[in-house]
Image (cartoon, rainbow, N blue to C red; front, top):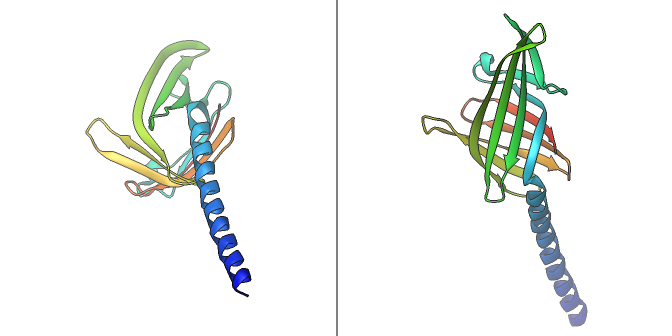
Length: 165
């Protein structure tokens, strides 16, 4: 009986160590997959404190396009996640009228990102006034696709973001 109890205790200890180390390894593997440049394929913000902040965008070959007074505006979003935990989001907006480009502007936003576990991460952005806003949520990442579902305490928005490498 003593031998069975020792074996069981050893088995339980090894199993616990293995489970926790596998979860840490998966988080590190996912973190490594995040590094690189991602093109947004969809973005939605719902349930915001201010309904004007709600948005639903689908990005096609030319970006997320919508009609404006002078013609059409198309936006593309490229996220670059760096190994040091920083990221840059480049928003490129092209406005055209009757197929002629009128304006082409790029605006960049910088922030930080952190993989908290194999399924949870935090993304933070600091605006030009120095105010930091963070979204915490779940994520799924493969070698070429990323999905993030989170919530932002600052504006109350639920966010869903998908991208491809």
